[in-house]
Image 1 (spheres, rainbow, N blue to C red):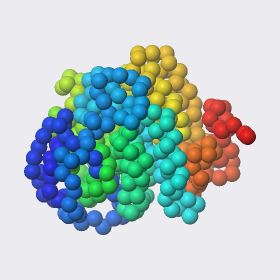
Image 2: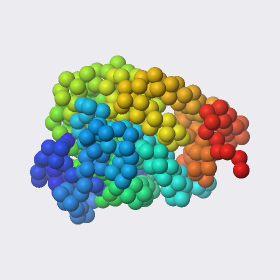
Image 3: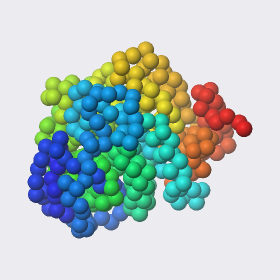
Image 4: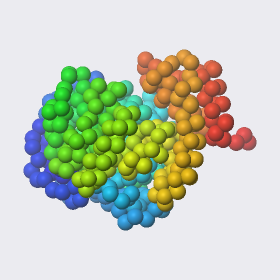
Length: 389
């Protein structure tokens, strides 16, 4: 991945160094599809790359499992390229008040819970984190709050999702200024793009970002499937540090893992599919980005630890339990799709006493009535409701 010390967005990098040497801190995102971003991005002065700690500095690569602390969970899964970041990286939900303002106290409780569970990083402003709904101001605040709360214990990855390259570059700049350690970007969308343009999109991001860039493969939202060969080539060329695969295409993920391994693992690979993490580990995943990890982070931490020690019976048992818990995203009768999924997560967190409200961004509404009771029943079966005083 490029570790250039670039000038303002819209200019090329002044240096290219290896991924291992790349330094990072400064966030990632301000990805509001409604933001009238300028093609050249902001021109604010950023700290030099050498002044910022790298993601590798936050996540060790010595192979020790199960230890958490001020430096995060140490170790890799053995073949990890990119930044060495592995393990459980929940895509943190963005709590809202009933009148749809960012709920900072609830966010602090949630992040504190995730850190206490031993997660290896925080991914803000992804699909679960409502990137597509947030204003630029809210995105900036979410990143800054996450960076403040993480306090260097784990890296903060920020989504920089937007329609086209110039807009994404502006969000990269803003995320870096806010302190994110890495950025996560999808393929361009809305205007129809094909392989050569998608490749160039990620090359440009890698050239101009001061932090590691992760590709987010989510064709259901952007209507482009990222080609495994292209991704590995981008990793070999230094543009990408890793991939979050939420495509649901197990064959493609297997192809990606095989090619990545054959080329010396230039990419770290994460699955975004909560209910087939065991299969992804077998295929070659280095970690997981589970939305359900907001509700049961300990379960995913336990599963990753079992994977690291080669206890596949424990991996399967934990995955089966989490798959049953994932029913919280399917029990709502008033809404389907994104509203049922993130609505289920937020309702569960509200019932657990972690966040104050299950409110969703407009045009969605919080789950209510029978839907809340259905989520509560699944949590009760899983033993994840708080004990009564």
